[in-house]
Length: 256
Ligand SMILES: Nc1ncnc2c1ncn2[C@@H]1O[C@H](COP(=O)(O)OP(=O)(O)OP(=O)(O)O)[C@@H](O)[C@H]1O
Image 1 (cartoon, helix red, strand yellow):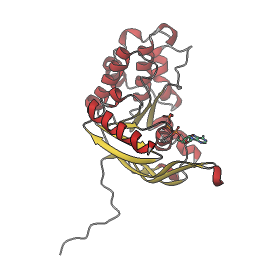
Image 2 (image 1 turned 60 degrees about the vertical axis):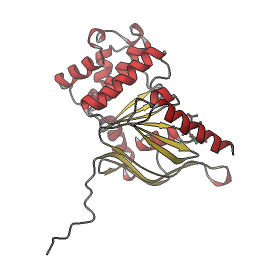
Image 3 (image 1 turned 45 degrees about the vertical axis):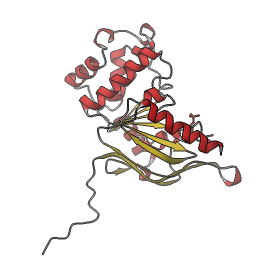
Image 4 (image 1 turned 120 degrees about the horizontal axis):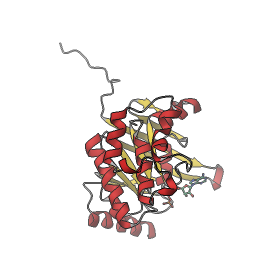
């Protein structure tokens, strides 16, 4: 007789998943449903872009997936840990040790050198940097010559690369990026996206990036489209024309 397998055994290579994820801001008739029962799975070692019209819930999704914001319904799993069950202390640890952030607003500390900024998350966690990992990340991001400089002595592109290195140094399950190229010129932006791509391909990192820029999203393995707090589509192997078509269709739908 075959041995029955347990249906509760979760065997998945998902880095992060959400089931019925909802986020409502405020209460009563003036409340806003920023996310409405979102289901999604982000495979480990993949690069996902999240796009959608302004106000569609992209930042809210990123914040709820990374434990920066609290869902009002549904579940979020980081690997097999349910983060929607965690208390504030556990979430603080999770944000410090298991996820990495590359946000425009998450500036580097001006008084620290690039090296010190990169190592800061480890220091906060009471750990020291694995020298070979530091070397790999710094080499990949082309920062070896700039490690002893402070942020004010670096270009915008270099500052953003230091922010990526800082996000990678804890070997997080997922790196979340919110408009990481927003402040960069076209060339530095493209370079940063190529580097994020290499972090996925060469280091096996999982990256989830919110962007308004279709050319930036074309660097990802998959684009997830949001509209009005819901998943409105999914595009694998995205090309620029295919992304533009989907965005046009979403905007036409919003106007109707
Ligand atoms: N703290 C908050 N309090 C109340 N409403 C909020 C809050 N944060 C977001 N919202 C609302 O939730 C909805 C989704 O916002 P969110 O910032 O996630 O959208 P977005 O797609 O990232 O937009 P954008 O592209 O303009 O940055 C919007 O209607 C917004 O006004």
